[in-house]
Image (cartoon, rainbow over all chains, first blue to last red; front, side):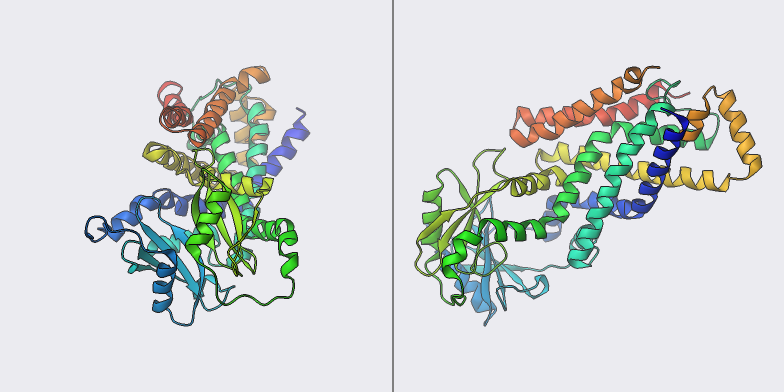
Length: 388
Length: 55
């Protein structure tokens, strides 16, 4: 590569990194506890075992569970109902309107064996603050999209970093860390080493993070794109106020898609449904498909099956981007590796800022001469200097 | 050094990483273990470089 080309790539690497670094540091630092949010939540909540019930107690209906949640928040309407995986508990989200804001919604956990409320899940506390800082910096959709753009800059920074890695390493064996000559040189070598080994992991986490920031527009696209045809016959009809049997809707949905199990139900009018259907979102039965949801639309006024929704490629990408970003799909050892790689990314970002600051402060003519001399004595050519 | 010599080790580490990232997604048990091994490679490379390639 010509020295001019190297210089250009160095420029790209410097500026894309500098712009996104402070946000990436925020994401890496807040992301660290989020990797272990299941474990932390469990520790903060304390004992979550359900109260004992007489042996042979059956399950109450989903309608009873919804009624219990609505009794706690009179005047609200049901928006979502989700199923716990490992215990007979459903979580009912209610709100004043079909398109309630997150702040207006209430989430109530209900024991399906008794149809009694076991707790309202409050969106507060330290883990919630960390999550919001990580997702949108408390700035809603614009905040999400902004962080998505910063993630895109990180991807450009990674690519340009790999390009300038080559001229820099021309005379160095892989993994060399020169610790004795100067602090700057040690951190330069560590920056190059950490950057090149975390390349794949960081790229995947960055790209999947960017995709996750697009979840709101992608769901809207899916609604406009895939559901438009199904909802055409209901054009102009008001939002129904009373709905048919929820359990029957779930049974109908599961019969239409054998082998799948319900993940959550979106009530009519919410973003994940149409104005006239229950959307019963089913998860696949295998490890590979359990992250991918397929919606089955049930007419909420008569309980008839309208359609098994299709899953366009962008919804598949969104479904797969969640585990690949969170690192929560391979047990505790994977989470620990995720955390170590996250810490390495923090060192990578920090050393990048350090190297830039040192180079800036050493920009005088004297320092330049000294650097040239050092570059010669270290046996690296002008290209390597440019790469620094 | 040729381009290949420079990127040989990084390519091996990147392939191990991507195998690790995908393995746990498609299966459980052995596949999870494969993902741990795959993603241990980049971490181990840093430790190895610090132990063996420090000058």
